[in-house]
Length: 274
Length: 236
Image 1 (tube, rainbow over the protein chains, first blue to last red):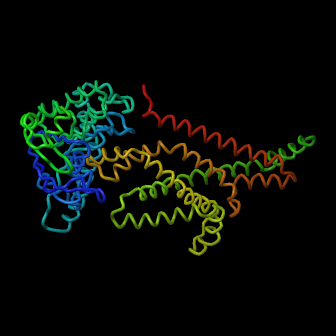
Image 2: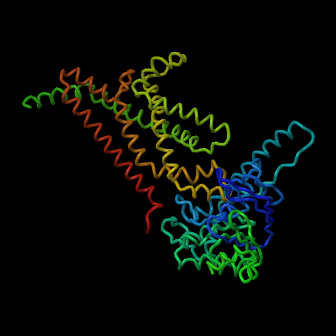
Image 3: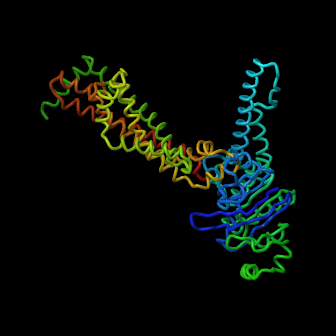
């Protein structure tokens, strides 16, 4: 689903990723672990080009999205991202947060289609060859209603439907992060990227967020998780990557990697955190 | 102060029994009109400049635009507004062959002038919004422009509203120089009363009073607006 080929990323002179090659298959849950500064988060942020890779390719749905000529916004719609600091839009209510992208992008697509149809009609009026119009099977009202229904359904799922009209500043960290997750889900992503989703949470709120991620995993969502929760990685992941100094040092099933690490650096890291 | 009552009487005569109050009303109207429309133009120009200044700079066009904006801000912050008014009214517009009423020239100049100041205010406001907000908006597939307009700028506006209120107050007071190009503002109206009643104490005091009331009213309105915008910050 995502093919990463020799991905490199430098910030100025500092080379953070020194050539990463891996494939993330559909339905896989990949956990990325490693010491801080190892490039885990940078790697994850390169996957949806929040950081533009310096070189290398990221093939997603058959397109190299690391190419600067590609319209990255189209592909980001299919990649949900969850941040360490939640990053809910502070100027929007909870439901506004969830609806913003689906409504805006839905409207945008509708406008583009209408505009194209308009051009086609003009063209058809002057030529014998009739080009078929794009099918339009929605209205602005429908887009809004559907987005609202979908948002309410997602909110019900996490039991926060009564917070729909609250502002993010009134919520606890755990609630914010769960809303950030369903905000990403509202776009029906094909893959979810989690950037240390529980690192900024109070300990008593970690559980509720991990439970939600676990549910998504059980439903078969493809996901890439950068995490410090080794227990969670071991339980949920189908594959664990150990990164250090900008390289993947070792990758294996969680069972193998945690109980029988091969590389000395993996051993060293695991002995410190387990 | 013995003859203060007499002065007041003479002022009242010109103000009420003559057409003084009409001129004051017109002056007040013009003052507020120049400041309000000027600020509106300023906010539009300032927002555009601020956005250009925070654009990523690895392409050529943003760099060229940025250079132009820097020049613009430097020009309008580097000269007094009176000079800008005079140059616009007596040099620039005649050279261009445009004939505008003085009032419109004032609105234009004050708009361009406050655009330069508002752009700095806006830029600070935009930079004060956490970068995570932009990243989150980009991550759901919104373009840079839409992320800016729907997420970052609304939050920036909330941060800068008190400062923008200050700018508006400054603008109201600065409009007192528009008589340089012949626009009729409060100063012109009270000066008229003064000249006709042969005494200036009461008219100028009245003028000061009107400015103070105006500024206090604006400060009050800004505070109300601020409070309603802070809705998203309040914990209930």
